[in-house]
Image 1 (cartoon, protein in one colour):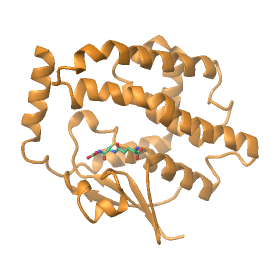
Image 2 (cartoon, helix red, strand yellow):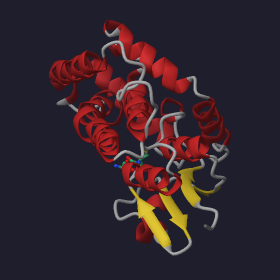
Image 3 (tube, helix red, strand yellow):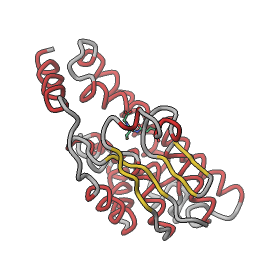
Length: 234
Ligand SMILES: N[C@@H](CCC(=O)N[C@@H](CS)C(=O)NCC(=O)O)C(=O)O
């Protein structure tokens, strides 16, 4: 197998550092012990060729291994897990359940979290954001409560084995680690802490943070300040 190359940004604002979705891919690669290269993109290049050809939505991460080019962090993590057989159980039913949790993280839990990020950051200055926030927060609590209920006192979602399902669920839940949501769910907070204490996660995080050596695109800081001021005034 040829050494894979992933894409990541060379600069993101402070609030996004440690959250850009190449982190999930780095974490999976670290868990399975697969070395990789990183192609760093300056902000803006994600929307242009040649990156558009890799990623139809003009985003990171992507993953290239020989002739194979993949986008979507979930698909990439699943590919790594299948290839290395380390993040998915061998038994078919247990494997299907681990994959089910990956989809649950991305498709049932992450959407209200993304809505929250739009309302509080990317569209904070828009008139619809503040009125929308209570409903978004309620949906987040609904999902967090449901995952908490299902996790119960287990170590990982499928009992005592860490899988790609946990990798994805922890990656998604920790987006709101500093926003006070997890405090109501001590078992979820402990689950996230267990996941992020794994040496593979710590290496992945340190590597992502070390990669931010570039500069903001012109006008970015002004745009962000404007969003925040408008959001406060709304
Ligand atoms: N569903 C995609 C989402 C990827 C995504 O949202 N990437 C963000 C960074 S975390 C990005 O590239 N944003 C820049 C942009 O959209 O221009 C995945 O999981 O890979």
